[in-house]
Image 1: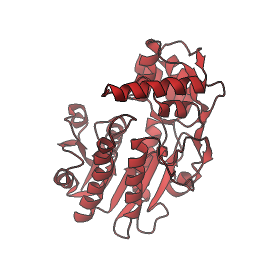
Image 2: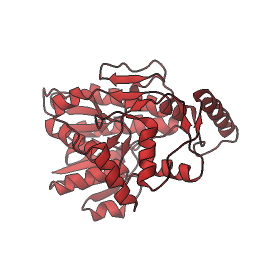
Image 3: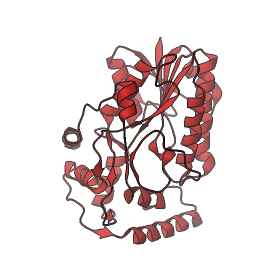
Length: 327
């Protein structure tokens, strides 16, 4: 039988597809666009829209497990532009899994579902969902995560993983944006108080997904539960950014602005962006300022205990691999 990966053309999705094929699985990749590079790995590509149930059901039919990785991320856009893929799409995946008797669903969530604009130091899965979310992405992902966990039954086992700041070779978001902004002179340190954050190397995130799939079973400890996933090596946020810049052969950041100054600039940029109906995200947003000036690192004891997850690639090794890939 086949394993389905939604969002198989993305950074995590493609890495997961490659691992599953390497382990001898027949894999389908479901995405909005055609990805020849993913099909070249040996996957069967299926194009469709997550918010269209018929498309999702067609992809899910005949599968023994679904890795639901696809989502709309970011901080810019209308609520509905996030709600359709993240909430409606996830509901469609759950419905299709039940209709076609798929026994396992591994959902890629995010630590953003518990972020309330304050420091999170050594946070664990007992952290509550906030009363108010700072982005449409976080809100819609929380609704979707709740739906996935609630859907767990004796015959349909679900789990949600919350990897933090995924990075590594092949990254199409985090590292390229950091490098491009630094080269354009649009990246500075925010705040004088270095905050610790988690960042998770891509191979470790893939490991966590495979381990969760293997552990899922009726009455398993992980069934119906969320898990934080990280490298288990909290690092000062701008040490991480400078590590990525060093891997790209760029000098470290030296300029610093205060949190209040950065927040004021972000507020103005967002206001202007909305006024002119900017389609792409402004150069600086309030959410980014908050993320760069607050601590967010997590206790992954639960993932170690219930999934057998232990990060295999260290930050140091990961940065060396990133440097090699960028050459």
